[in-house]
Image (cartoon, rainbow, N blue to C red; front, side, top):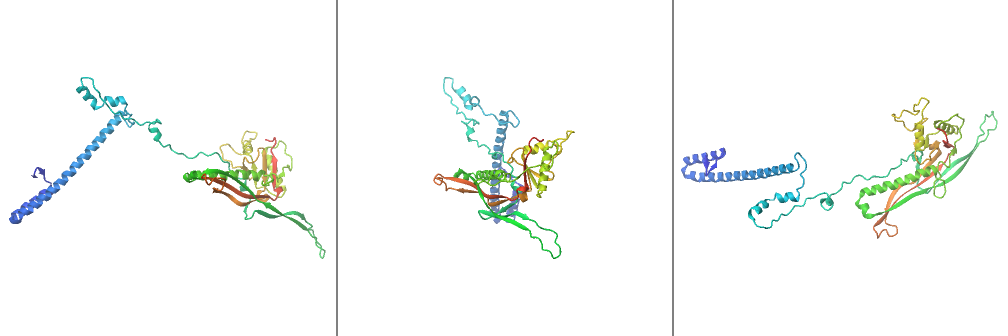
Amino acid sequence: MTIHNIPLTRSAAALLAAGQHLRRKDAGNADEIFEQLTHKFGEHAATVMKKLSEADAKMGAFAEQVAEMEQRLARGGGGFQPAQPETWGHQFTKHKGLASFREEHSRPGRFRVEMKTTLTNDPASGGSLGVPTRDATVMMPRRRMAVRDLLPVVSVSSNAVEYPVQTGRTNNAAPVAEGALKPESGLAFELRTLPTAVLAHWIPASRQVLEDVPQLRDIIDGELRYGLAFVEEGQILYGDGSGSNLDGLVPNSTAFAAPFTITSATMLDTIGLAILQNALADFPADGIVMHPSDWMRMRLLKDSDGRYILGDPQTVVAPNLFGLPVVATQAMAADKFLVGSFQQAATLYDRWAARVEVSTEHADFFVRNLVAVLAEERIGLAVKQPLALTYGDFGNVT
């Protein structure tokens, strides 16, 4: 059934049938009701046709997009290869206006085509618009600091530390008869004062850079703190006590003197004898410090059958000798070693833990928008038991 050449849906036919029924039932009102239903049906039909038209338009646009994609793939050689940019010659010869120009102009004339410029990676083209990927900052290598961990560390709140040291012992203990006078012994002490020393360094930096690049601030902090730790480890081992230098472990240690002689002694034998020297001084050793090259020389020692003494190369061997941890650090001179009861030998005092500060209070930094980034620490080192440290040389032993 149709009205004005528009096909009726099932619902619309039902509405029309209802109108005809009402027209037969009540001729007086039927015409009015029928006109209302016909009007509503017309609105419904117009809406449907509008939606169908919109759907056709969308499908047409989609078809054009698919066709364009197929053309691009064809120009790119098939598959999913990217389309190659069209040359100016290609653009000119395929231009639609060229064919018309040939047909309409038998005499000399002029034909003009605006060429499309293709963006490339050339710096003069789109290459200058590219933004490079920023990878992580490549930092210089850092040494692992471990000598501090061998020592007891005490935090202090003053610029100097006082500690008593026993300097003498008179032991007159003896068996005493009943009623006899008991012998008297004596102890001597000395109060020593240790000043704390400041380790510090700084670098200039732009205030804008520090505010705009937060990662740079972290890098600067880390580098400055590492610089302090690097110098601190050298001072702990070899500080000579002059000026503001620490009075280090090595200058206050006891020279190695083998308790007995071993024929054709190896490096392992030398360390064993140094451990014995500490034990005989009543300071059982709790650690060993040596250069990494000396540790590797020991690690490569072999027996008469060619087997590695400290374990096969494919096994993980912890730096450990005779049950004591080995601290391998380049802060210790090569061919040297330090065996000690470090917990009893010395104490490290922290007046200021390592800290980093930023200030404009330097020269004309304020008006130049510059800042001084300062790192510093304040520490003291007291070597209380020189006999607890044994320092020696491997010499020509293997």
